Length: 373
Image (cartoon, rainbow, N blue to C red):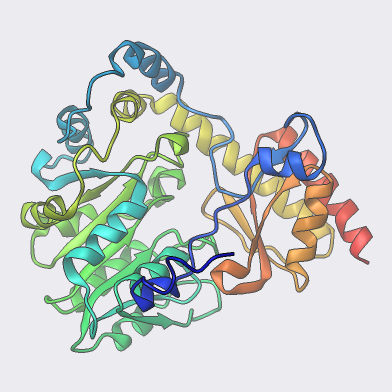
């Protein structure tokens, strides 16, 4: 391989590790020598096994004839729909290409060399990658029990150079959640010159009565709080890459100054407006996850493993030979996620699918464990 570009690039960029997503169905089919993806299931990327909302699908079909036009650069109607959902003003909402784009935009607005970003060590790996990208120190706080965010530990890690703290709630990849009471106390204690970001990509998968309200802290206007949500998980629209940030208008204004124009495509805007109105699909998704989690947790335990109870659409499972287990599962047509890229080489993450997919997963897991001995 040539080295034409590496020697010219900024040194810290050349040394970056790109994010490694879960393996796609087509790649695994090619590796297994299969002509197509039939029979292979993917439980690696925390996708909604029910697929997109039917209302969103109809909206996408209706939008096809307009795909020669640029999208609304300000996502006016989608921002208005999201604002109505939360009882806030549209000026408090900004759309992005999934929550990942917002993480980068927040870093662009607030981080620089010499500053630091604080988050839990067993949380979404993108926080670490963003810190590295902006030559910022990543302060990774151990979890109190190995799986749950230690909010007191995060508070203790904040110093004069801290610009952002991120709390994934529910947390990926452990599937745990911190309570409303704990979050409220945490926000009160974070210094007013630190931006508190709640990454809530999985919150709408939680039963409504258990969900944590962080938007109230945005509305209070006492601290710089940003709430991130996405249409990828609960609404089954991961392929469209659309997420949103909720913050006070001056925070949204800053993010708009560093985002690229037309960052949310027209198809995504149409689908997401329709998806917000499909509460039936959301209820079916939660019901599928309740039943699927109970079935998988019981089955995994019976196979001698110790899965972590979950609030999300995936299960965190310790296994010393995680990479080998994932490879064996693929040979049995099931894709799961080994977590070495998250700094967890002795864990895998298994998504919750449809009843048929969950049965196939347990059968593959049993066969794989037997093969590994």
